[in-house]
Amino acid sequence: MTKDLLPIEAIVEKLALPEKYVERLGRYGAKLTLDFLDDLAFPVRGKLILVTATTPTLSGEGKTVTSIGLVQGLEKIGKKAIITSREPSLGPVFGMKGGAAGGGRSQVEPAEKINLHFHGDFHAITSAHNLLAALIDSHLFHGNELDLDPEAVTWPRALDMNDRALRHIIVQAGGKRVGANRHTGFLITAASEIMAIMTLASGREDLRKRLARIVIGQTRAGKPVLAKDLKATGPMMALLSEAILPNLVQTTEGTPALVHCGPFANIAHGTSSVISQQMGLRLADYVVNETGFASDLGFEKYLDIVMPSSGIKPSAAVLVTTVQSVRNQGAGDLEAGFENLKKHIAIVRGFNLPAIVAINRFPKDTDEELKFLKKYCEAQGAAFALSEAFVKGGAGAAALAEKVVSVIAANPNVAPTSTYTSSASSLEKITAVAQKVYGAANVELTPQAEEKLARFTKWGYGELPVCIAKTQYSLTDDPKLMGAPTGWTLHITDVVLSAGAGFLVVISGSMMLMPGLPKASRAMDIDVDAAGEITGMS
Image (cartoon, rainbow, N blue to C red; front, side, top):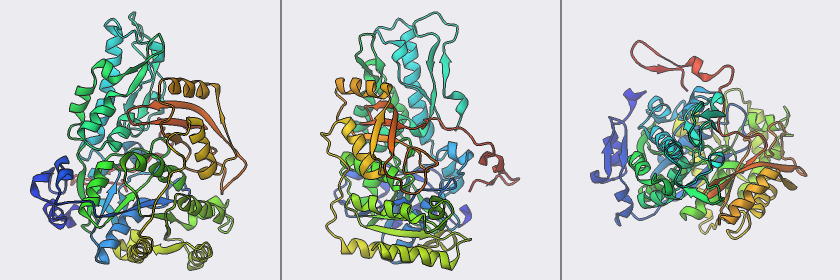
């Protein structure tokens, strides 16, 4: 579709962006320099719209398509708008979900490039992560001056691919030095703490401070060892120097888009970079920002982690739902699945944000089913609109755009809240999210999780926010439990300290930080034709 795209100069002109802040990367892409945030001629003026969803099926509910369609719809009705979205990970692109740049008439473009190597940000993050891992093993090999306990090293390696074979590995097999035959593993780059740090950093100095305070393990005496102790901060900064700059591209209809960073929302906090959002709020009247998976995941983490850290406060939330999502949550019965929709509306309202339900129309949906869904939204007193962004682009989301603008105008003094106070203990925070957001009755920790929480509290990290890693397919920690269950127990199996990012990753159920490829992966459909065009990625 690149033949229909506008040159990047046209997007820059549309935003009235001074040339001095633009670094071009090809005909259709650019990076924006951080100096822009210091330009007093561009104060914060925009309203942030978070896009979330009801509990998804395996194939997803078109949340990205709806987000892109919404920003195009806002432009259709005469508003100055921009989308801030995450960069796709190669794991899902070649795995089960396929490309993550939208679809149909609502994509960020050039989609194939964005879905693959794009501007090299993921590679830079992967390299910085693995540099730190290499420095750790080098330190052990060359005498271990810090007296680092090889069995207590917590920093793994990273790879931007679903590869279950790398979850557990042994490094330096056959060696005789300190740390030889040490057990470690890989996680997917989207779950790397450096990805989280890049997403949350407010600028280069903040990035430096966060990288320096990464905890990579502990000494034999039980004291934490930081990245700065290994003198790793500077070289990681060098690798990330360009990657910290947000990427300016466009949607299918030439609407400006900032695509930057890509943490998952089931095992990380799941949103685009704070820097891209801060830029968007200075460039447009409305900023559409997608949060990963459903409201119990990326949306909750935005309000409990990103908002307190960045100070960015959203004005409204769009809750994407589909007939297939609701029916799936009702075990095949559409009406029975309404409990899931009701719960997600309640989650959004629980954070004191107005909710607009976007009913994303799929080809097989009947008028009767859609009418039934609309009636339920009316009964819940929720604003709603039908979205047909996949087929019709911005025109198919214009009604949704009108609804969003009217809801924001009717609620000018929104004051979004968080689930817990910053001074609450880790266990109190986990319990608050489990009970107030997920609907659980209790929380149960394994001895390992309890020991780690106690250790991290002793080290001074006890009041960090919690980022709960949980299945996206259920409100519970059991992916097979549908609807909106109550009276269940959230099982916490492990806790990982992300001191640089500024939160504790609390792992529930059987969640893993390195996914695997399915038996029939999307990779089988991807190819390149004789003209060099990539096929089968959407």
